[in-house]
Image: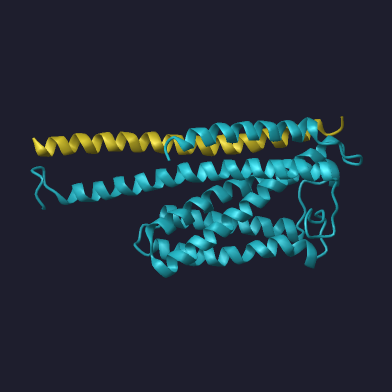
Length: 230
Length: 48
């Protein structure tokens, strides 16, 4: 497993470089928006990756609520943290695209507002994990994660059910896309998914190590300098 | 070549966000390594 990580890291770096090349040069230029449309190759894959990570967080939280396994709790924490990073990318790149295309940075329409609410829910989840020290914290966090996950389909389908300024979904909705653009979009999604997986993996290892160290500190505080129980 | 500034800003900010996050992971890991070293030292001290 230790050898697999650097190999996967190199492969992911190559894939990300290829995806960047395709997004900037390989993909055809959109006629109406021009080059600014290429933001879409980072914005949409980041959103999909964030949604997947929030669903992983949901699955791990439900598993933790049923089985109370610490590993599930760690997976839930890690997926929420990395998911928030990707959701932050979505919330930042969206307005950068909107400014030249819509003429405004932000509008309080359903898709944008619900994405912001989703981000705030998972940020509060991370604050709960970080600043609450009680034994019930993983349980409370898992309950919050289940509520947060209910927001994910709402964000995705909000452009179907409400009149919004946001473009229609690329897949499964009323929108259509050039097959070459779809190809570049999927390459970028694959690259960002691999990157997210690797980040989650290293963060998982770090969290396990952190918990082992915390346990060792707790044990040490129970022992006197001669190694006997106080 | 319309909107190049916005395009590069979006791509740059994306990578800045990811790199800052990776930086926090690396710093947490190095802090943890120091803690492990201290724990090892204190373990050796208590045995002697």
